[in-house]
Image 1 (tube, rainbow, N blue to C red):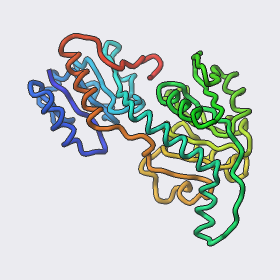
Image 2: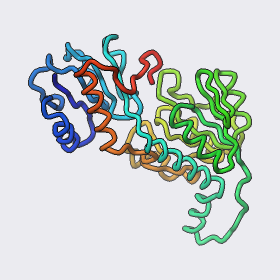
Image 3: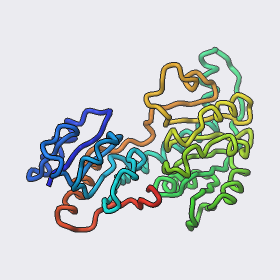
Length: 306
């Protein structure tokens, strides 16, 4: 058995050393420096080269290095290959705190005051009275964020692609449900997985259904937002503000209009960062499950993409 690490854009030295220490009997290799591609049956991947997959004839399991699997082109994988992902309980708590913090910051006009401070402008205003939050996506992260917001006296709705029940959140589903939710919310939080159905979902059509005082908060993937549509909505005052943690290209280019836009709060994809020890524990457990022929943890439904 051989495990291949195919993660681009980062130094994987520490990750591979820790995996090897935990799995001394298993060869841990990094793409493209592997001795025998026919021995590889488990791949840990993030933005792996598309040309790689066809070169792994005995591949059995692909593990995403993150909570989502949008960095893996599932169409490149044979049907018998299982796909798993990382589930980090602390990540969900961190995400919930980030969302609550930035909704409160928008409610309390903090960005306006930061700008006024730079201008030495003394002009107090009452906080916004808006209390209605709509969450796109009601999986583990969405539920944790909803719980945190409800605990802090916000009225929370959520939209899912199929019916889900909740005791303290009004859950909408389907296209009609999405349209209904959008008409009465003040803050729209995107926590959707990135799929063909959700790519570009925050577009001109959706933004036109929001109130002009609404705020968009995207902590899912940059590709959920049509950038020009968002900028147009902000510039023509049909949207009050946006908080963005994820982007089409990361790092964001220096000349991108988001950087200097007065209505945009920008953070560098830091809303919820997985703990490496937790990630390694889950990867090791799934490698051991594969080795023992037992059920894998956190299996992805490949028909849904999450």
